[in-house]
Length: 193
Length: 121
Image (cartoon, rainbow over all chains, first blue to last red; front, side, top):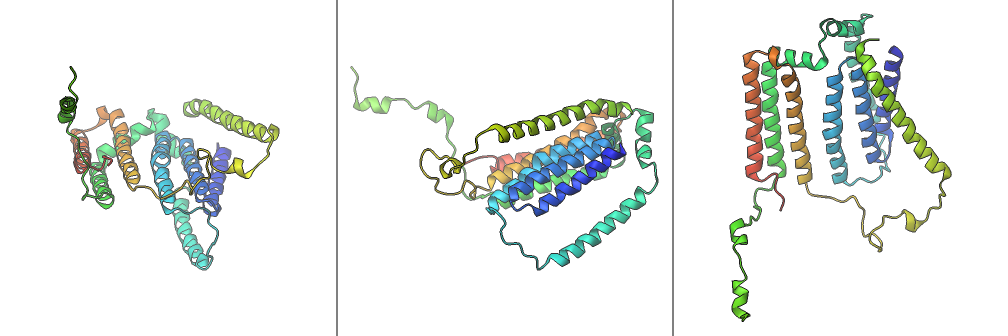
């Protein structure tokens, strides 16, 4: 169990490094999908199977497609010139963010049996991950849920307003007029006796 | 070993077997096939004549819009699942909250329909 967890984490780090270092952007998107899949396996390993399936549905099913579209729109073939001028600054920012996250997580996970603690209520109560999500989210965090709905609405309207060209309307065909056309006009010239 | 891992071990076995089978097929096809590349063979086949341009060119932004709308309704469906499972343990507020959520996204959907975001020219 611990061994599997370590193995999956090492695999996650390797694939996320390959996202950065692969030259072909399409390959890096494929490695990004592999990273998402590995993250979902890790969350399934922590008894959070609903979270893992949500990772696959949302990240692999939708967000990876968005990344792929961005790559196809930008029309970058193979990254040939790499600018290393700003690399130390990015590395510094990355190390600072990593230590911030790492120390926070170390606080949470410092107790030894955090795995048992996390899955204690589930094994005691027979509750699955999706039940816990539902009961906690819709009973205690209802306002956050409603705000999430408003954010989704704003995102939808914003995406439509940004991308759609409102000026040229679609040409509609009037169905009954199409159907009621007959060959009378043609047969006026070609009288069939 | 809890019941959870017993149930998921079958999926893990399936997953490992599929990885093994895919890598075996790739290895065998590399090992036993004749590999004789040629500029005509490796170029993209385009009805007999030489391809004009790259297959990856700039396309309409509406594909992106459809993908974003798909993502939003996908998230909406992801909110439905835990609500449906634990409906009998929820208060009345959460029922009406879900109605409000559906109403908001339905408003967005009707807006997208009326404006013509889902139409093609």
